[in-house]
Image (cartoon, rainbow, N blue to C red; front, side, top):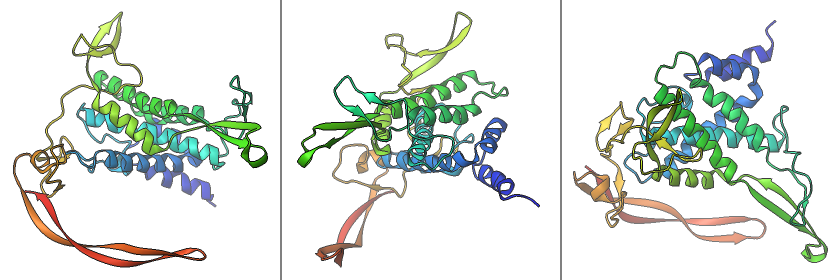
Amino acid sequence: MTSAATIEVPEMCQSLVGLVKRQEKICRRNVEVMESVRYGAHMAIDECQFQFRNRRWNCSTVDPVKLFGNFLKLGTREVAFVHAISAAGVAHAVTRACSKGDLQTCGCDRTVSGRSSDGFEWSGCSDNIGFGTAFSQKFVDARERRRKNKNIKRVLMNLHNNEAGRKGVEESMQVVCKCHGVSGSCELKTCWRSMATFREIGAILKERFDGATEVNLENRKNRAVLVPVNNQFKPPTSSDIVYLIASPDFCESDPKTGSLGTSGRVCNKTSKAIDGCDLLCCGRGYETRTITIVERCQCKFHWCCYVICEKCSKTIDEHVCK
């Protein structure tokens, strides 16, 4: 008779489309962790779409099911961001699962204990960021480390951006404290290390996307390394996002670049930024249509404990790119 675990393994691993053999092997050996990996992938794409919601490229072509496959072949900064946010998503989700006690293979970070030099006591459940980032590195980077990879330039770019994503999670770690004593007098303060929210991490990586460095491949001392195209720039750190080629304008639909074009996108008529109708519509103009939206309004709290709202409708003008 076939055991439930034997059935579950291929189902879980097959749900992540495009895995290479090394990733499939990791998946089969770490089935309980893979639900967190899948959740991290969805979380990463949701965050990508939030951070780029007002841009011409809005991350809508990236499918979380196929995230760990060969989703985009160009070395643009958009691809670089997807690598960074996906590696960060896996690290964050696995770390959170450790802290919640969902995984047998890890728990809280017990290395953070004792009395701090700042006078507080380490206590509580510190996030085990070491386990989360190590698993992200092992699983996400496995695609780039296979022997069949011939494009060393793309391999180094992807590995660099995977690490930049994990660095974003590590560097967001913060000390959270709780006071103890009569009336919160803080006679004793206990603290633990906790990750930032993934929204905060997404904002950090988006800022690094905006300041990404264009790089090229050079051989130095018989070793291939990525160096800035502009030699006046400092070499990128492991926290920086790097890319190989300039991005297209994403104005028109093009499957090769992952562009859906901007036709049909809602734009902001009054904005002069990238979400404004002039820039988002790429000079093609826009159409204005009147729509009616229904919102909750005049909400009242009733003891205890629920809220009752009315429904209000209003008519607005919506501007859509041609």
